[in-house]
Length: 349
Image (cartoon, rainbow, N blue to C red; front, side, top):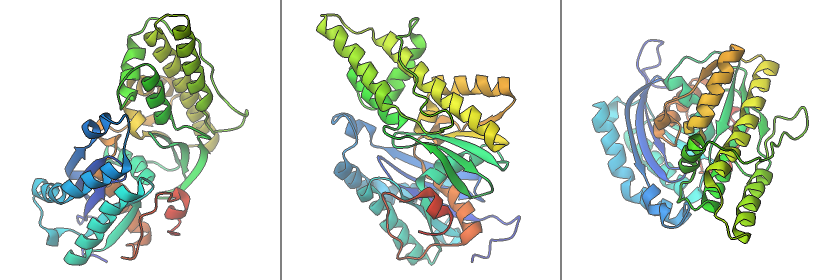
């Protein structure tokens, strides 16, 4: 274990994130202070394809990973020998993209003789909240991203229990598919959010609550209802009312997300509600959740947008928690596209 393990001594983690289409490196001190954060986005590259192309994403990571790490060290004003550990997203994500980060992190850990910390991508999103506030346990996290929609209960630091998840599309996927139907380019979520906030009308669309006690989500039926509205309009020779459809869709999504999250906070006794993931940057969701939490007397923590989308600073925050609980990860660690959050937190990875 590093010499910097005292309660007040700084513990510097170089973190690497390459799970999808952002190449990112960050240096985080004691899991909460970001000394450097560098993000190279591939959005413009993938926009031409209407979504992320895994092989292209992997090649882009290879092209920039070295310079991204060097820039993070430069911004932080640190040399490799001053680091205490190297952390990397082990999973979930696109396996080819994950491999680039994992191989880079292993190489650096070996070359610099530093511990390696394999880190869970969703744990990173959750602990992005620790970059802006101290967490109080038990707490509850609403994870909303392109690939994940989950309610995660944290009984103690680093202990995750998924109490609800999507049964089909993640909310970010649903936003992108609706955006595509309305003629917006990838990524479509911000376009739908903006249009929804500007529209005076809302198309009537269903709310999918599932079983009365369930914390699970389902968005495929809502997505299909939107597609039906669009197709019906076009079959009549009319242009769909994109604003009304966007607002109706967003209101349906937000009402279900907020309703289930608030109920889960009450029933689990959580002291805080944490919002995280790429869709946490959605202004409609942020404002609705803030308004409801204020009315209910619930403490809400939301990271700034830069820490909602994929970034390495969040990986450094989660890695610090993992280090304190379990120490480092063996160098024979493998990238795992389907890595389980609960098994990872229990040390079974």
